[in-house]
Amino acid sequence: MTRRAGTSDRPVALEPIGKGNRAAILALELLPEQQEYVASNAESLAEAKQDDEAIARAVVCAGRVVGFLMYSAPEDDDEAIIYRFMIDRREQGRGLGRAAVGKALEEIAKLGHIRRVAICYEPENEAARRLYAGFGFVEQGLDEDDEMIAVLELGG
Image (cartoon, rainbow, N blue to C red; front, top):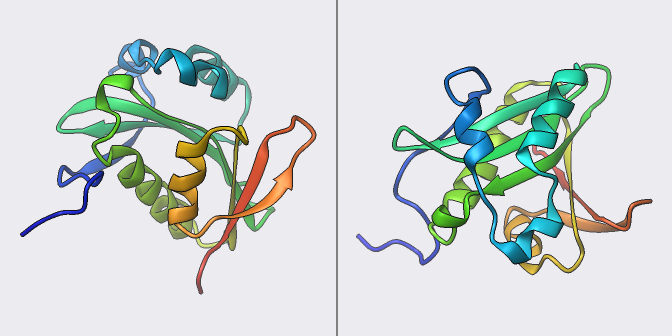
């Protein structure tokens, strides 16, 4: 059986942040040219501590933390927002990002009250644009911070 280039046959899981994986999340790195696209994981974890609506997840593959993702899905809203996502520079190009976004969308859909998912990214981040478009996210335009907003309508 062949698999598509850029896809992973290794299972990916999203796990809550805790003492057992916090150091591994802080040790994750982006490529130098990607660092301007996303806040550091240290900043994100500090933000998650202060924001009751932030849901932070370690992206885990084969027992190792390979990425980080954070979203919000307020109970009084039908829209979730994925606002932080990264895969470690040493793990990129293996389909783990695609697998992690898929897992996040599954987790968000299981909440039951979410009808659409928004995601934001820097407009010049072509890799992000292709990744999210592959899931059906449709660009809506720039927000007040000049980040591209894309939205996916969930079925059901």
